[in-house]
Length: 262
Image 1 (spheres, rainbow, N blue to C red):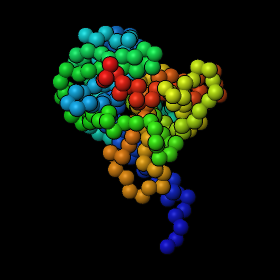
Image 2 (image 1 turned 90 degrees about the vertical axis):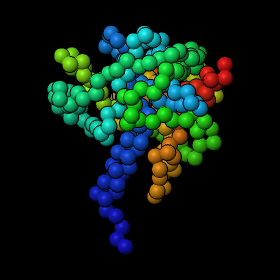
Image 3 (image 1 turned 30 degrees about the vertical axis):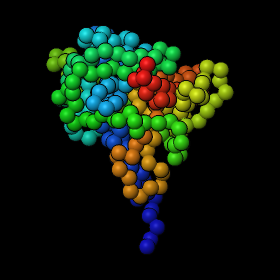
Image 4 (image 1 turned 180 degrees about the vertical axis):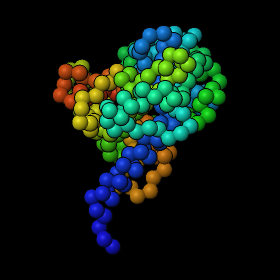
């Protein structure tokens, strides 16, 4: 059998990337205040029969619990945007704004300000989540992992357009391939946090990504994989802006699970 050529390998890599982006997008939502230009990210999770949106505490703290707007993934596959020019072409097309932000029915909030994580407990299962799923928290972990590659999914503010005449929103998620690493910085706690370097040519504007999920895909090189093989290992809470490459900082998912036993 002939060895696959460069183009074949690139096409396979792109197919894997698209598959991974759509796998984690099943759980990813954008959180939008009723007023103001800000945006945050969240992950749909479950604990038994209870349903939550997991996010960063500083994202939840900026929301009005009586009027949280949420933008879910549309039924169609996620749109992978390669270049800024392509993004601009989308943003001048109001007909692409097909996802309407709806009011999220939040019953109460569980939060840990020190770890910068929060759980928005939902009052029922919104019909708008019909094309999405809730990740069982009992499957999430950040220890005894099979490798160090991760995928970070969130909704950066610079990829968001609100079409005001119809209140429709075009929201494009950003999926980053990254690698778990560590540092000796005084403001990094390896027992509580994860540090992630990521593979992009340009410096990313991370505003809006806070609260997004950090996912570990199946072991690289695996020929067959199932979307359910993804492991939720943490929630992004920020980045080291003055460090080369602006590595991302995430809170380990165990700190989210601790909110349920307080």
